[in-house]
Length: 226
Ligand SMILES: C[S@@+](CC[C@H](N)C(=O)[O-])C[C@H]1O[C@@H](n2cnc3c(N)ncnc32)[C@H](O)[C@@H]1O
Image 1: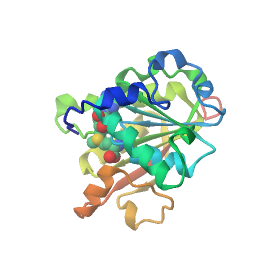
Image 2: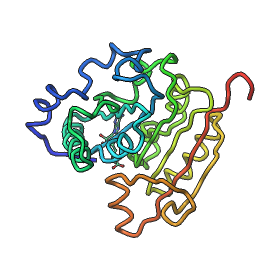
Image 3: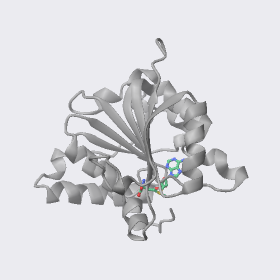
């Protein structure tokens, strides 16, 4: 997703209590980066932050790390999250179960380690990269699914949504060949029996265009027993 330069993004994030300035400092100890130790959820490619903000409000008993490569996107995300909290009657100071991180997912295992034991990973509407020579950039590409396994807890889930048919079908194969078990799959999420879906900015845009949303849940097999 392209985004114009936002001059205010970095200054606002530099004084934001839920923006992480030095993510490497928390490697292996993300639980302590939050005010309360709770299970960790991770969103990669969080974009404008609507999903992470709603998730944080709906799941106060979980700690959420939301990662994006673009600082300007995270600047927009910060504003979205503050607005969502304020609309639900909470102050900015009460945003204590969500952290924003500016980082390239390609290198994520440098800042999130096996000790972090992420319980759930969300990949929402990642870039489809349809050209053969670019497919390895996909956030569901097997090399990344292998990397995610390094910090996912046993039995943890990846929840993946997209509008893109080609990306979805190839990702199903990526998950299977990378040793994940697909426990739920629908090619039309909004007309499925899945409950509790949280819409992202891209999801709203594509569903307004009448494009069905593809969704799957993949579980990391227990590495000892499976
Ligand atoms: C198409 S947008 C989707 C945003 C949001 N998840 C949604 O559903 O509305 C993809 C997002 O992934 C981010 N992204 C792409 N490649 C990335 C990478 N390698 N590391 C971190 N973020 C990345 C982009 O900056 C962008 O915000």
